[in-house]
Length: 180
Image 1 (tube, rainbow, N blue to C red):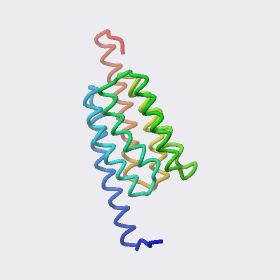
Image 2 (cartoon, rainbow, N blue to C red):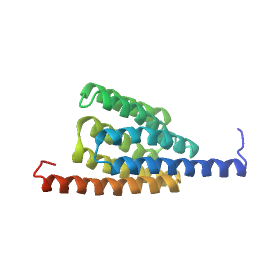
Image 3 (cartoon, helix red, strand yellow):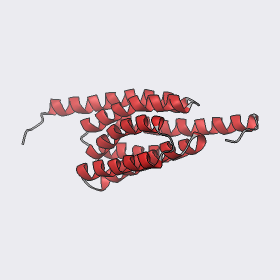
Image 4 (cartoon, rainbow, N blue to C red):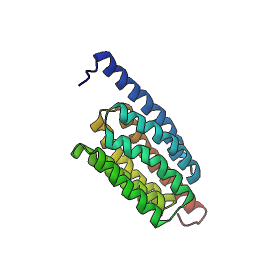
């Protein structure tokens, strides 16, 4: 078994933290947007960064599901509301988790992947953001378990930004007499 020296471990952890800060910036910009299409594009790039971050922290279920989320975002933009495509992504999420499972600490990442898939395929607007807020909470837990300070901060800020955007959308709907 190959040993990783202290400098390699420190470098990997610092890289993980740095990559998570890039994801943070992309996610906050996405969730601050009132436009779903802009949210999806920014989340695509953010999840590439999250997958790299989790790989650097050797949290393989979270890394695999984050990488799969990139494909999910592409598919949901092309096939919104398509239950068959959603089912395929859900099965792929479960398969990634089964192949990389290390124990109970992988549960939050799996829940986040499953909830996010359902929310993005089947919901829009406020309802989608509410489900994604619950998924973000699961990602907060997953980041804490992986030891990612930057990822924990990123997902906490995503959660808060998402809640604020939901409030803004509700306020705008009331102001203009629209259904939220």
